[in-house]
Length: 386
Image 1 (cartoon, one colour):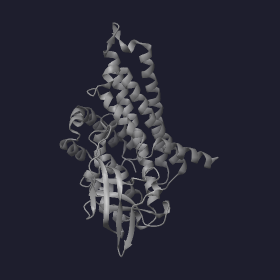
Image 2 (cartoon, one colour):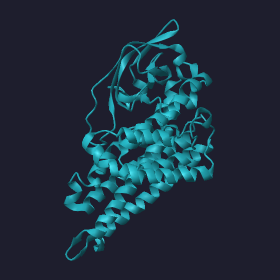
Image 3 (cartoon, rainbow, N blue to C red):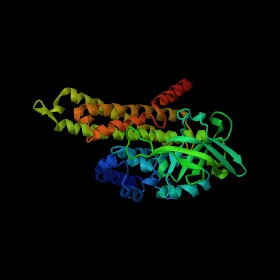
Image 4 (spheres, one colour):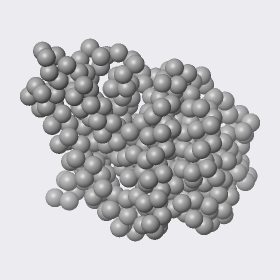
C-alpha cells in the first residue's frame, strides 16, 4: 500500500505549506487557550489528513509507512497538538482494525475514520498496567452474544473527542494470551470520562481516564473475531506507532535546531553574533549530526517495515523500530536542551518556541513504550539472535 510518487509529492508540498502558513502562526493561540481551533480541524479533514493511512478502498489516502514518516517529520516541526487531533485516529486508534480486523469491521469503521467523522482512541494503559501491557486488569465477561466490560484506562489520548476506542480487556486467564482487543463505541452506557489531564507540556492535546462500568459490547466487536489475540494486535499497532513517534521526534528536533541557528545569527554579544563563537557552533553541530543520524535510521526502518509481510510480526523489524524510537526520542531531548542553552535566558521564557518544545519533547520518551522498554526489546532480540 502506497501513494503514487507524483501524488505523494503534491501531498508533501501541501502539508509543508499547511504547517508553515497555518499551524506555526497558530501556536500562540494553542499555548494560550489549550485548544486546536475548529477551523484548522476542518482544514485537516478537507486535506485528507484523517485518512492518511487508511486504504483508498475505504476513502483514505493509503500511505506506506515510508511515506507516513515523511509526513510526520513535517508535522513534527510545529506544536504536537495539531498532529494529535488526527494522529492517534489514523495510528494506534484504528490500526488494529486495519491490521487484524475482519472485512465487516473494516467496512463498518474505516470509512468513517478516513473522513474524520469518527475519532478513535487507543485504550491500553491502566493505573497499574502501562509498560506491562500483559498485566491489564480490565475484565470482559461473556454474556450470551455480548461481553460485559469493567475497569479503567488512564492517560488515553483524544478520549474527550473520541467516538470509539480500540480497547484491550482480559477475556481469559493471566498473561498476554488472555487479552482481547475490542472496538468500543464511546457512547455506550456505563462509559464515563475523567477530568482532562493537566500536563507538563503538549498544550492542546487531550488525555483523560476512561472508566467502564458494566459496559455491554457486542461479541462481534472483538477485533479479528477471535478472543485472546489482543496483545498481539497491540504489539503490531505499537510498532508502527513507535516508528511515527520517531519521525515526529526528528521533526521537532529540526524545528528547534532551525530556530536556534536563526537566533544564533541574530543575537549579538561582545559586538558580534553569538553564532560566531565556537562553543555555540559546537552545540549546533552536535544537534545536526544527531538529527541526521536519527532521521536516516527512521527512513531505513520504515522501508524495512513496508517490506515485511502485511499484518505479520517480525522480531528483527520490531527491534529496529525500538532502536529508532529509543535513539530519536532521546536525541530530540538533547537537541531541545541545547536549543534552550543557545537561546540563553530567552530560552527559559514562554514566548519563545524553544521553551515550549523543551517541555513537549519530554513526553516522547515515555508514551508508546518508555526508553527503558525499548532497551529491553532490543537487548532481548539481540540475545535471541545470538
